[in-house]
Amino acid sequence: MIENKMNEMMVIGLGETAGDLIADLPEMNNFAKLVALREGKRYGRDSKIKLINLKERNPWRELWVPEGGIIVLADLDSLERGEELLKLNKKLSHKKVVFLLMRPHRLEGDLKLNRANLIIEKLLENKASVLCFDDEVMISNMRSSVNDAFANKRNLMTQSIAYFLDMLRDLGPVKINLDDLRSLLKEEYGIVNFAYGKGHRISDSVEDLWSSPLLGKSRSSADVGLLYMRMGSAHGDLNVLHDLGTTVELACPEHCQFLRAYGNGYGDPEEIELLLALIRTNKVEQAPKPTYQSKPDIKKQVTYDEDVMHMFLRHENTPGLMTKLKVPTYKRLGLKVQK
Image: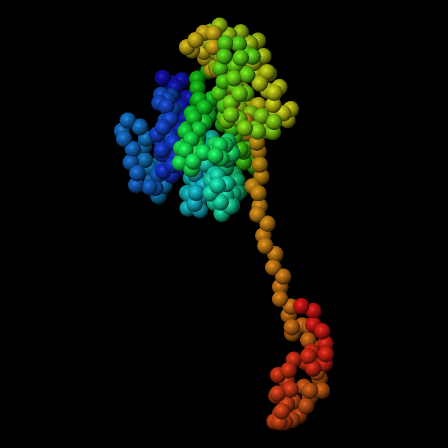
């Protein structure tokens, strides 16, 4: 019981979309689920989801952070969501917290993408550790209908979240620490791809892993890797564990830094299961600010006709003088003004 408590994780879903995704997750007995919603939606008791309003102070002031850490799941659909994420980051500062965020797909337009980048930039300024799903993988078939594409995206996200939680929370002698992941991300955010593979031999399990379409282009450009290995009793030799991890890592870029974890085998004693997260680190793309040319200051470029000014001072009521003064001096003198 004590060991289970030490390995609990918490998932905070911010927003209705995140709450629905968490509700779709398979039941996992050794971690807590918490959804922070400002929306009025409610979930059934069987979902075991607890609702907390961000405006309430007490529940957040003494929020229990489990040993395994916290995953914050949220979309980036509005600036209001960004403000909520910043508030949450302040409440959970200096904790084992990673933000797993859903960016808008490019189909939804540059406005939403730029807004999402702005939110990510603010989070990074506040020392948050940020991961984003690979949207191009989530909607890869551009010929499918809109409804089918976004329904498939939701299913793939739920599946990916389950992989992520499995590799972080599962019991075993070697674990992935969220603090280590946070240190590898540094001041950047990561585009993350998740994959699962299994087989009865090392080669079979690795081949099945690399065949996952969810990996996209990450295999050739990953900067950080999280590898979780779960093996049946027939593969209990430490040499097998080492060879398996090395085989996966050698297929990735040389600069990719890996964190490995190992879980106790169960089920088929001959089976090997692999869970992989490949992360490409990125700096937030700054949209170029428009440059405006200042209008020329006519006053600085026009020289006054001193003779006319003296005439005006001596003969204030000279007929027709005001008419002449209405014509700019540079025109009367034939001067060209640079525009």
